[in-house]
Image 1 (cartoon, rainbow, N blue to C red):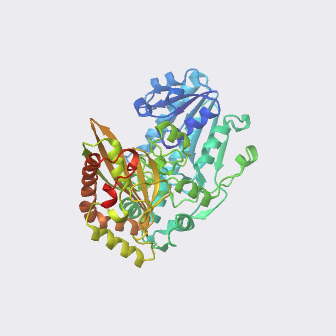
Image 2 (cartoon, one colour; image 1 turned 120 degrees about the vertical axis):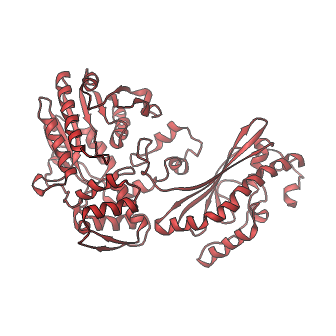
Image 3 (spheres, rainbow, N blue to C red; image 1 turned 180 degrees about the vertical axis):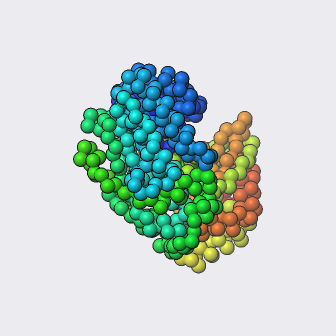
Length: 512
């Protein structure tokens, strides 16, 4: 079919497009700012139309020749009047689809029953479905509760609350039941309904196999993430406004976005009509597994697939995107989506060629140390031993050469690509995951070293750990980069050659 996806730069739309392409559909992406789609790996496989759903003429133009329209635009951006904007947008899409002879409109809304005194947010989501259906084009409306996947606002709010706060004072909504669903199940349902004639004109309620309170969902997240069980203390006097201010303070979500989400948490969002399973039966992913699928890939948007992919850190963008799952952070996700990653990045320029600089980098650690005050590293090793870690005394097998999987003190070589990349993963006891990465690029007749220390914290202690070490990083890392660049020049003068391997008989590095 020829399919128009409105909201193609959004959370669901950006994940839906490649799934539709895989199923053989012809896709037209509607975007208010088409340039936002330029770096998508599937950009050459789709048509892109400039569409503002509040401008009827642009919607009419995009709907011509289209079989199905996915309406995935949502105006909840923290600004007032989102319900009115959503209502007007739906009316424009309805009229344009009717004029163009579209066969079906598919809409993703929110779960909840109208007789439950719904929040403004959920009431608006269901109103949009009614506006779309008030026309000649059959509408299939899918209603979902919390969608589990990196970038989903509800999921990110849950994740940050649990990670940051080992003890939580919470309002009464923690006892509300919900039925979370994995993002890949949502995407599959969105695709399946346009291929099922019985789905035309129906409202389907979507949910995973687990019905949990929000408190239970928080504890499930903590268990999957390897965190201690959270202490949750409900406080009845916390109003939604105070709760949203609290959420805005503790999580990266803006308070304006947190407010309507928190308001919605008082409504029970569970499946009460099993029409979807009758028409399109399938097994849904359990909540714990959905969380695990998301967490295996959650990292900072710049590095997630670099560190997790089998293709290595230098795989092209298109390759990394092809290896990613629908739970992964995506380029179109908001800045607060994805895992927190702290970084210390330093550059240094050397007159030596990349091969010599790579040799210097590969000789780091062991008896030669890290070109910085040795007592700092020794102290870190002692502290690691005191808490049951491996300490600094493992050393290294060879003073110069390295291979993937080899040990360097309390690091292990995770990636090595001569003469461009060395990445070490920390095996000391830390509240999170840590890496030390060196990238080498040619620069004129010499080379540039890009040194990055990265830390993915776990919970509140992980964040405190990083900030306590920041002053030491300011001493250690700039000097390390400078000394490595300088040592590469010494290596050239002493006759050590390419790839981190000294020529036979060379003793310059061994003596040091």
